Image (cartoon, rainbow, N blue to C red; front, side, top):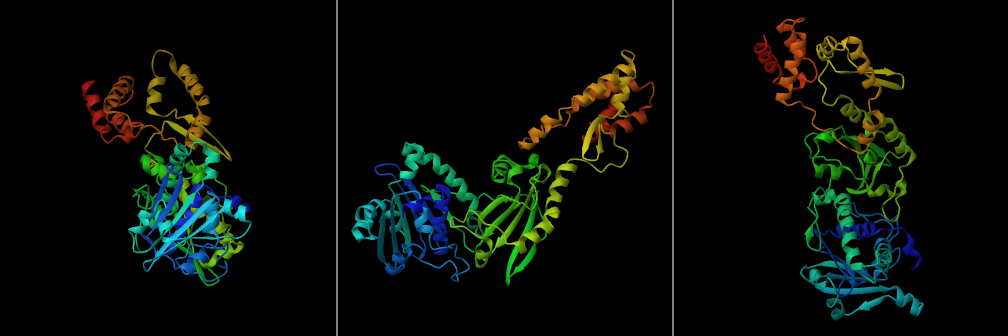
Length: 473
């Protein structure tokens, strides 16, 4: 029992594993209740079907079910170890109280008692002992359900020292984790909406695919037949960062950044188990950071995916990896297009860009467009002359902060609004017309500037240019 505490659960994954059991028991409400006083504890209470005394005793056994036994489609369990290993990874005192058909049953594993007696001593609780437990009042209001209680929280205490402050801080991470892994249950995708609350504050689901965002681009559904079971894939291209609210970005930055969060999102019976990985099928790249793929896997194929006890790691079988590799390029391509063409109109040959991009195999460079009307106007000024202007432009080109731009984009920073205000456009138009009116007619000036940056991005630019010409004839 002591050795099994080192399986590798975190508080977040341990709590999620207990909630898996609640979902399997058809619960619609799960309350996570924690407190540091008078006795530090964490309690999880659901309104599921509950268990009889015999089933509860078996549930407290290690590996009470064979991992290869047939499971119901809604069963999120795997090895028959989750309740015990998840719990004792966090505490030394595990209590399970369950209610079914009005009958209470309570059992307890106390690691200190096991060491003292040196025997497999599962303690049975009386009804009075059950009713005296923290969290029992939440169970008592349900006709049926189960209470899982953790006490002697030595692992948390060793990590944070002060349990009162430490519990509060750790539960923030738990809230985020549960909002992520159970977001499809919280949305009711499994047929009935699940409500999860921490200290009676409801949790809202956090969909990392942003499926309800109007700018998210879903791709076609693909299905893979494996041993008569269907694995379903659906790609999503997230909106550009500039189109995301702060809340949207927090949901999308699952692994801390958009770049690290790209990849496959593996759902086992709608429960998210693996996310933000290409399984070494494709590299993570900046232009692919908006690419996500939802992969729905039935629990009947667990043996192929090498799902671990914590349901936190899985490896796709070779047959599925080959199929994923075939579609990886197509999955990333839409994300690349969003970055490469975002905000650009189709170039019909009339628009004058201020910067030209030159590709040379795997290298590129930026140069200022010498044919841009504003550059021509500057070069024709009597002071300085064209050679001085050309020298200045070359200096600007060679000092373009490419590394800084890349670093900022890699940190998911968004570009400030680059739209030029109307009053600034009017001043720019006036200055340009003053320089060019001797070489261009008013009609040609208005037409050429209206199709040039930065005027082409403002719907009022043509009117502004026409008014400037009239005022300065």
